[in-house]
Image: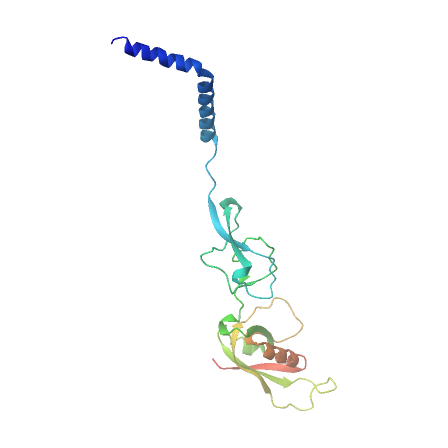
Length: 216
C-alpha cells in the first residue's frame, strides 16, 4: 500500500515526458497571451454621436432621414457634438454638410423666424430714420410703411403723398449693428414676415422710403 503514491508519481512523470513538447508549447502560448494583455493599452473611450446620413444643403430643415448615429473615439470629436438623445430635427444647416460629417451645434441653427410660424422668414428692412430704429429691440412689434421717394422720372416727388402700410404688426428679430459706411443711409432691422410680404418689401425698398410705427 505504501508504494501506491510512488507509482502514481511515476505515471504522472511518464505522462508529462510523453507530452512535454505540447505542454511546453501550451505554457509558452499562455505566457505570450499574458504579455500581450499586460502591454496592450486599455480600449479608448467612445461616444455615440450624430453624423449626416447624406449630403445636406442649407435650403431646408434637417429630418430624421438626414441623420444617423455613429460611435467614435472621444479624441476625434470636435466641441459641441450633437447627441442622439436630442436629435436636431427642424434645425437648418448654415452651410452644406458632407455625408458622414459629425454634426455640431455650430453647423446647425434655428431659423430666426421659426418661433413665429412655419411660413415666416427673416426679412432685412432698411428704415430711413435711424432715430426710430434706435428705439427698437428684439421682440418689438412694428408696422412698416412706404412713402414715395422719387417721381416717375427718378427725381424727388413734387409733393409728398400718404404713406402706405406694407406689413403690419410684425416682430423685430434683431437690430444689427452696422460697422463702417454702407452708403445706403438709414438703419437696418430684421423682422419676421411671410415670403410674399418679403417680396413686396423688396419692391418698395427700391423706390420708397420705409418707416416704422412702433406697436410695442
